[in-house]
Image (cartoon, rainbow over all chains, first blue to last red; front, side, top):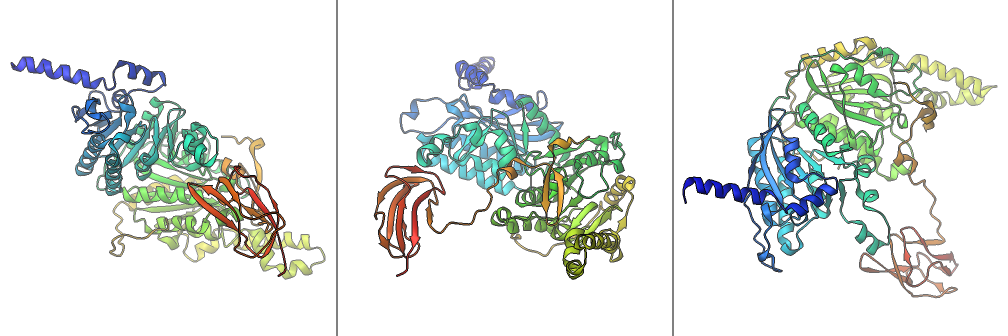
Length: 514
Length: 110
C-alpha cells in the first residue's frame, strides 16, 4: 500500500470508530437531551486541544457470543487536552456503545489515562454515562472497577480529580466519583445509585422513581454526593472550567494568580451583618463584599446550607472560604455541615490553598436526631481537618462564637495563624441567655420578679462576657478590627503567610474520624 | 441582598431563638419517639412468611413469634421478654416497610 493509500485507510478506520455506536444510537442519545461522549469532550476542552488515545482498542470477551460483537473503542474515549490553557487528562464513557457498559478493555483504557494523569501530575476529569458492569464479562468488569478505585485513591491529594455524571452511574460505578474531589451533576440527565428503583421495589417493596432516588437534585440537596448542580451540560462544563481556575494542577504546583481586583459589591460591609446576634443575613453577601471582583464560587450550595464553602480570590490569589450561614438553621454546626466543611478544608490543605473562615454560629445543633446521627463523630471531622491543615489559616469572628463551635471554627487553639474579631463578636462558652440562667440561677429563682431578674442578669452577662475583649485579653484573638478593615487585613495576613512552614510529626497517615 | 422575612421561621438553639430558614432535610427529619415496649417493629423491610405462635399464647423470652424474609434471609422474630401475644398486626405474605408494627405483646408475670 502506498503511504497515501494507507493514510486514506487510517482516516476511514477513524471515521468508522469515531461514530461510536452508530447514527441510530447517536440519535437516541441526542433525543434524551444528551451530548455524545465526543461532543462532551470537545465542548469541555479548549478548541482543537483534544488528543485521543486507544481509539482502536477492542474488547476481549469470548463468552455469550461476544466475540461476534464489535464495540467501537469499547465504549469509552480517553485522551489529553487543555482547559483554560492548562493540561488535563480526560475520559468519557460512550453510552451509544453497549450502553457505556464497563468491560475489561473499557476499564483498562480508563486506568491507562488515570496512570498518565498521575504520572504527568495533571488534573483528571472523568465523564460518566454508563449502564454499569458489562454482565457478559463477569468478574473482569468487577476487576476493572476495582483497578479504577485503587487509582482514584492513589491519585487522591496529588492531582485534582473531577467526576462528571452525565447519564446513569449505578452500582459499583458510583464509587469512582465518590472517591474523587468534585462531582458534577446535571438536572434530569444525571442519576446515581447503588441499587436502582426496580431492585429496590422487588427486594424491599419501596416504590420510587429514578429521579427521586438518585437524580441530580437529590444528590445536590439531600445526600451531598454532588458538589455542583447544573441545568444543562453546557452550564456544567462552564462550572468545571471555573473550578479549574481556582485550583492548581497538582499538589506541588501553584494555583494561577489572577490580576487583583477590588470587590464590586455596592453594599457596605458593616451594613450586611445586623447588630442583633439573633437576626439572620446571607453570609454570601459578606463573602462577595470581601473577595476580588465580588466573585465567590460556591460549592455544595444546596446541601447543608447552614455552612457555606467555596473559592474566591484575595488580591488575585485563590482562597478557600468556610463561613457559617446564619440564614439557614441559624448557621449551626451539625453532622452534614461539619462533614461538608471538613472535606473542603482537607482539599484546600492537600492542594496548598489558604483557608479563610468567617464565624457566626450558635454552636452544635442539639437534639436526639443529631446525637443519634453521630454528631460527635461528624463534628470531630471539623476539629481534625482544621488542626491537621498546614496551609495559612485565618479566622474572622463576626458575631456568635459559642461553646464547642468556637473551638471547632478554626480557633487559635487548633493552630490558626490569624484570628480577628469584629467588635460585634460574642466569644463565650455559651449564649448570654443560657449562661445567665445557669450562673445566676439562685439569684433568678429567689428574685421577687424572676423574669425581670433574668433580663437584668442576661444584660449583665452580655456586657461583661459576650464580646471579643475577654478572648482578646488572653491573646486568643490577635486583633479586634473594624468591619471595613476586613479585606485589607486578609490581604495582609495572606501576604505574610506566603512562606508559612509548619511541620507535623512523621506518620504513615492520621486516622481522621470517618 | 434583602432577605424575604416570610421564609424565616423560629429556630431554637439552647436558650435563644433565631429567625432563620429550614433545610428540606431538617424539615423531614424524624422526630424522636420513645420506643413502645408492647410493639415489635420490623427492623428492615421484608415479607411475612409464617406465624410461629398464636394470639393469646403466653411465651418466654426468646421464643419465636414469626419469620420474615428480608434481603434473601429468613429472620425469626422472638419475644423480647416473658409475655402474652396480644395481636398479630400483619398477615402471612404481607410486605412490610421498616419500623412497621408486626406484633403487639404484653408483659406477663411468671
